[in-house]
Length: 178
Image (tube, rainbow, N blue to C red; front, side, top):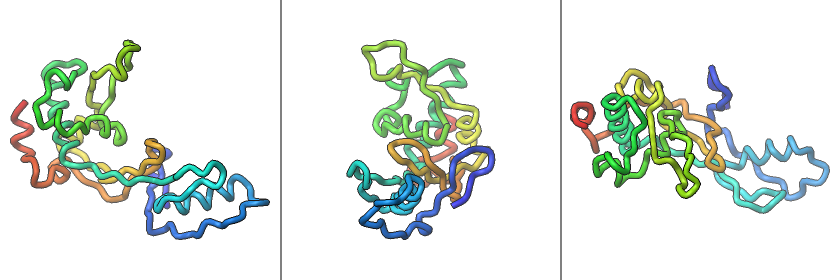
């Protein structure tokens, strides 16, 4: 386990995690319990305090996410404003429903919702990192680690947009079509 330079995220490696959870926590400090719990979170375990299942989930940046991001970047560059995919996105973006997962990598932002009758505003914008990634200018972590849907770390394995698209999408075709 190491710290990613420039932020407080931890680079995690699940091979480091193999400690048995003790049955009796009497006399243990909260920090000791946390440390033991962290060691079990990749496989999943029940919290000794509340009994809830606790697990760190490893999520891959997939081709559908990257294709959606590329579409969003091109649309944003065309309009210069927040984009509403539900009204303007092609079928492959609407069908994969991956836009929200891009938040975990800080590749997109969603506009704050002012309408209490709606769950979200539905308006999206790429971040500067999202634009650079979509244009294949930077590498980012291939995997994000989530605990209760919050980012707790990233993999050391990295990818760029072209590589992350795999064989399912053609990078050049996506970049040339809106």
